[in-house]
Length: 173
Length: 86
Image (cartoon, rainbow over all chains, first blue to last red; front, side):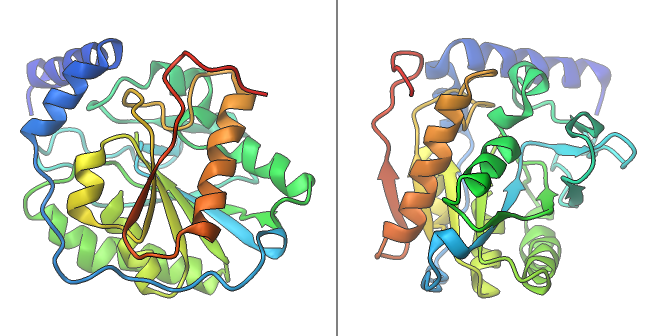
């Protein structure tokens, strides 16, 4: 993808943040593929006060020493990054041209509320905030959707399962 | 985001997602969603507003426990930049 088209995406992203109605129209131009194979479901059967809660973000968050998401592929990047919240928060950064992350750059909790989750753990509202979270970039299309569904998302699910987290909170960019 | 959420739930872990594009959530059908009509890049609100961010986290956790119907979307009542948070 050319430098020009990356600048175009960033420019549109900034406008959509200033004018939410434009954002809605841009979103309407891209139609998410309907998932017809039912809705996966497991009941919540542990009280929140004893639950370890993990965070997963599709806002393009990664550690500075990890490879950034690929912004040159028109279909996006379906890979994931493991986020270690035991490291300083400023070891994390965002690579994502498709939304304006100026506010999230100033305060990561706007897209990934690890500090808020820790406060709820300290107050006893949840059992614990999981040490490890996972980052993806949103805006994945074309053949990468299948990679996400059949490979990278199940790989993250398996890691969360192995870490015995009780619940997962997900948020976009 | 919803596709990742579906796979985590399929693996046996209950999930809740925060959505800012309702039509995506309707199409992708994650197990549980709270929706906010807020701008891109701000699912938990504004920088430096811990009370606002905490409110969304709490509402999401409340919906995690409270939603009984698979695929339900809870519309949260908070308007962008027109609420007081405590």
